[in-house]
Length: 352
Ligand code: NAD
Ligand code: TYD
Picture 1: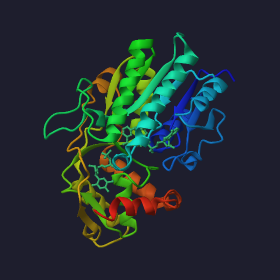
Picture 2 (picture 1 turned 30 degrees about the vertical axis):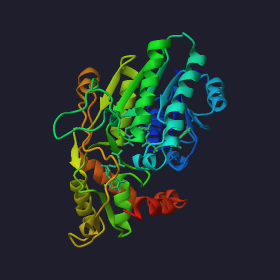
Picture 3 (picture 1 turned 90 degrees about the vertical axis):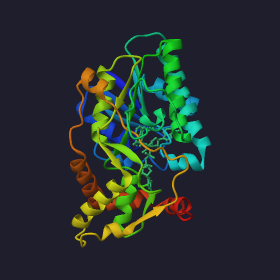
Picture 4 (picture 1 turned 180 degrees about the horizontal axis):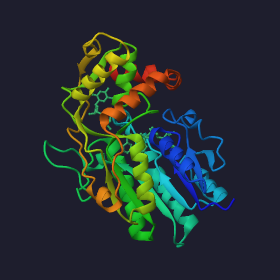
């Protein structure tokens, strides 16, 4: 088959990556989608059961930090474009062990850039799209929004590693003419998210009548976007965004953590047929995260005006879909939490 594009999607077995792979495989039968993933604790091929037999989908198990793994993937499939999502993605884990974050997020990204440059040379028509986070901008006070021009000011080992990888992506553009795009997105939620991040962790604990650990006073603010909308934003920026540019992606949807957890508790009282107020009693305020960023909020005007992208659904709709998915897919949750999840959980939460 003469593929129109041969896209290496790194981290395609993870949360956002699997939604993006699904979108690309279904919508672009003339693209070959090569899912390149190491399958860490966060990667799960079952996320892609519905597309695994499609002709335009291939899975390659590989490590972005390995020179030979990456080179072999570029050469075997004559990769024309990269959408790079593979990363260590959880702030709390980065506080426990920052080195892994530097290795995967920084060294892995530079290794990929290097391989792309070797494979493409000076040829036109390629794209290296780096999927990044709004956390590179640091922490907001009560006012203001992150714009593309906001100075980078990362505060956690995770955000410092993502900021560093963004800088390398830009450096390859300026130094070698690498055709790059960067998207910086706010917090995502939706199906297939590993239950270490706020929303799936709270859903999981509510189902099992376990304490709901809210850090500090729960006053920190995040701007939540449905993962399917993030995937559509990446698709839009990949195709229509300008080379060398960054685009902020967000939902104009700010919630304090405590309001969000209370809202989820109410929704799940109904879904689980529990007395109103039952789940809220599980809330437990615990020791705050070290260096906890107060507020993230995105100004996505550039993406909306230039590329006409908008989120497709409200937070209320997206959260209900998400809760319904987790309740209907407890087997998935059991599978991904069957390894060393309990040890992780005890280590992270027992002393708080
Ligand atoms: P995730 O943790 O769910 O998935 C990461 C994936 O990368 C997994 O499939 C894992 O196996 C793979 N991976 C890890 N190390 C690898 C390596 N060395 N080689 C190959 N594959 C490897 O992450 P996510 O939440 O889907 O995030 C995806 C990307 O989007 C990340 O780059 C993250 O920084 C960024 N991002 C995430 C959010 C969010 O809210 N989750 C928001 C903005 C940006
Ligand atoms: P998280 O989902 O880890 O995303 P990020 O840190 O990248 O924004 O956390 C979202 C917010 O929820 C953040 O302010 C920390 C808070 N939080 C809790 O209060 N309790 C928890 O158990 C977790 C995982 C997060």
